[in-house]
Length: 431
Ligand SMILES: *Cc1c(COP(=O)(O)O)cnc(C)c1O
Image (tube, rainbow, N blue to C red):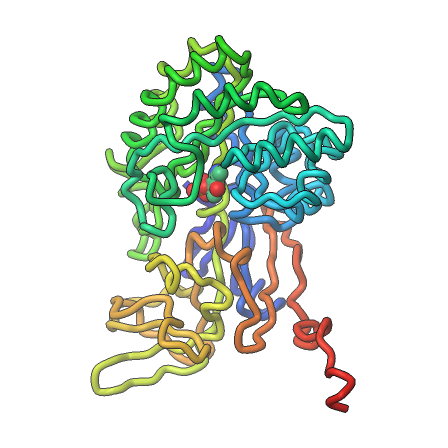
């Protein structure tokens, strides 16, 4: 469950009216619920509690300082994918020693920075990368803890742009090659083979691909433990969430449709723990979306309603530069008014002002009739939302607000327009 619900006819985040936030801080506006974020983290943490484990929040899904601090305060670690993310999480009060560093293209400078900060593990994706980490560690007279990302060649059956665990994509090292890679890496003097990692894709709503992958990889993990003394097995992230939220259709509780098909931490743990608990290894998880996705919404204001022969266009002040998921992944976001409307609905396209046909949030969807000045919320926008925002069309980055109970705080000020070109200049010869 999450903490966005109607109180009377007004949409609330925990104890705060979202319309009051929109009026005070302007739109487009991201609003996050600390209670939802906390609950989601703890659900996973508790589900995995029968084994030694660490939940490393994939901070690429939402890296606002307040979000990171919330996770750090709960004892969480972080899955990072760049030196910038490591700097950011340290600035937010996170512990580098609980960070795992993923990604196929780590640079010398990033490796050096992460080594100096003492990350828990580099999750390496190729042999040249292992050699590079070894070289940088040798120069610094350090030992680098590493894990290799194994590509289990399991089809996660998710969107093509977010599937990662098959040989069609750039991630990890093939199943067949793993033993040789560890054998060669064990000869590199500045590496310590600390674990094995995998991550098969994102927004998986079925436990089966996870189960298949873990079953396939466990024998490899056992062999690596025996031969190289590895300490951890990271089963990656990818736990999916519900995007089709029933609060859109009146009073129904959103979890009413959480039928058999929804992947819960309990179901995930029930199927995976029996496979993992006898390994005698620390189990790492790298969830991003499951923790942050349902914890945030994007609030936008209706500027115009444009009727054409075929369509009812609701033109809002938020756009693909604020939330690119519909354009990029064909993603579905529930769209609800901040003030509940009775009765009539109308088939609508909700579109932004950006000059791209791809700039839409939904097409031909039955929505309550809205007019100029009404506010709409795009639900489940907490993951891969603000972090993917751009200034395309010279639109400034949206503001972000964190809510906890009856409290709210602006945790990122709206970007002043002039800041968009602050680093630019006119070349001397043009003047
Ligand atoms: C993106 C990513 C994750 C998080 O994926 P979610 O679907 O958000 O849980 C975890 N691990 C790695 C290596 C990733 O690249």
